[in-house]
Length: 93
Ligand SMILES: [Zn+2]
Ligand SMILES: [Zn+2]
Image 1: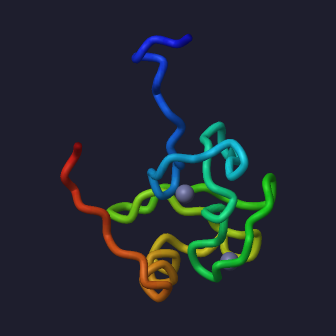
Image 2: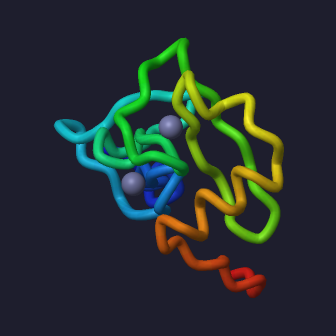
């Protein structure tokens, strides 16, 4: 079948874990877990086309629901922190 180089397994654009077909949805052309597609501030499920994917410095990619996508970056970081998300280690693999 495919060579090893094709084995670029799908990783969730949000949590970086492998995504199975059943659990996958494509957001901003990236595969993400259905479970991961939720607002970083309120945890509500996001809807495609009505949410925003945004890279938050030091925290990585987050989605924001319709209500929270227009918050200022500072407010987003506060919301993310309040949800208990940790900063990502700066080390690259
Ligand atoms: Zn995920
Ligand atoms: Zn929200």
